[in-house]
Length: 417
View 1 (cartoon, rainbow, N blue to C red):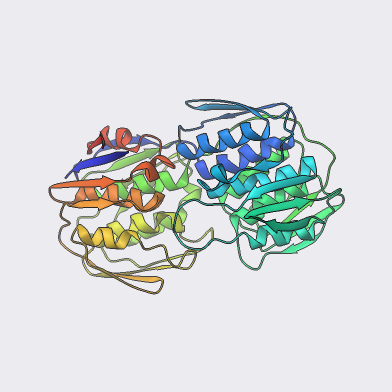
View 2: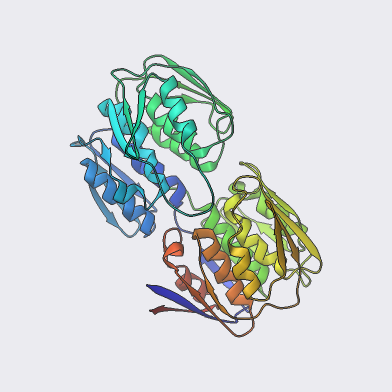
């Protein structure tokens, strides 16, 4: 098991490059199962979660080649409809194979998913949507067993916005007979890029970037090649690193239109933000202003940047409030930040952050993917030395984060325990 040893390093400067979006690549890997033949994905980072999904696709019968920046998935021989517990328990996104397997093979048996411990994330909306499309769903020994001779179009209303349920239903509905209408669908960029991939494969989908999506069922799809979008959460993490620095940082290979809520909040905190076509430069404030955020579905402030923004507010000149409406229990990083001499109190799903002049180094433990990133940022601004253990969490979603940050002046060392 690895850990990070982080020395105080706020004199960051220069340019940092964003990798491909893990949360877009995972559903697209599953979508490749719908088209027999070889699909190719470019701009693919080297991440534990992607390797786990690649292994799952191999179990199902696909041939997967995965090198740095590139992945090919040949799904010609896909025939095994089961996603086993030992893989699905490691990563919640494994549930994405449910819709494609059901659509292509007429049956699927998928273990209930695992992943980060950031609160309850039920899959009931996935199952209700598939039942509306005509699937028979049974729960047996911790597995979801779905069967359908022929899926059919339906009007489906999601009780709340869900990226996973929207994408899984999209993938199942492309082969459904007739027309499917999704209402209150999620609008996140990861949903949009999955729609782009499916349409490039030959699907007929309209309503991208809205809450109302229409899918016209077709008989088959064909494999394609596509570049993956940059990771907005990695970009946002680096932008917050810039706000914590003493010097400007430019984040390259990003989509500013995916980061508008963060751009607004950084400006509210006193930063200057220069937005170009594919890059964003953050000029830190001389004095960080207290700024409140409420996490919401896109285009609101993303829950996946909540922990990182909390670190910025730890050094603000005043009191800030952070409310998470997506995952109300997503505050396990607070106890670790308080070990670094932050002053945060949590009441239900709201954190009150009393800004302090400085943080201090200590030994802390990562509890989930985004909490890991927050602790790395906090360790960089803390006086002295910070040790972050259980960093396998951060390797699930950030490709060699310490190397990228060290290139712009951070002092982070990976150490084997």
